[in-house]
Image (cartoon, rainbow, N blue to C red):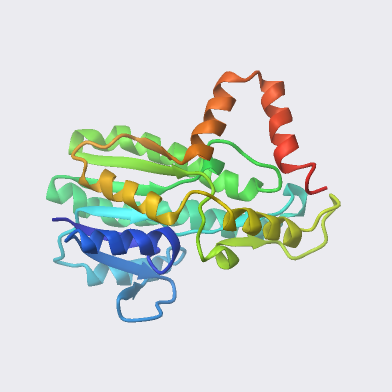
Length: 261
């Protein structure tokens, strides 16, 4: 059985993954920025001192896997997104993952192997309108992780990306956020975020399915780089691959712009 660190284990996919892993006999170290109980350790991935303190708690502790599930989804037109909004989004979704990778990698290297698993998004392979900051953070994560994988395979450390479509969870009120200021584009970020939450409530992909895939990746001795999860993710990637660019652009506009404006 493995010792697994889940960064962002208080809700959604991270919580479900922790539960499934514990049921399977694995040891789970779960974290949250603001833990609600003693089952989670405090960790703020945007704060170097918080990361240093957390890693001090793991001194002498074996660690086989890190699952990075922290972050949120920001809705806003690009022009309406302030630099502070952009920094905060990239800090949580991308730079937090980089900081945690740098923190745990020496431990995995010294132990002679392990796994790093990152929760990405369909938004990291295909950008959507009014979601530029989120897509930028996930595109960055995709590139960083792919490069990292090539570097670490010779060290018996396998790096993987989990790429789900929209997931039906009970935490959409907090995981989907918006810029609360008037928009120059005829829609408000509040309306956009609410539409995203409503779509999420009706999504067919359950967090249990994503968590089960993460468990399978952990238990796979040589996992792949990227795993698409759900019909939506596979369909959109296939359409982008095979449709002419203008047709795919029209498809995205019909799906995500006209119903909002």
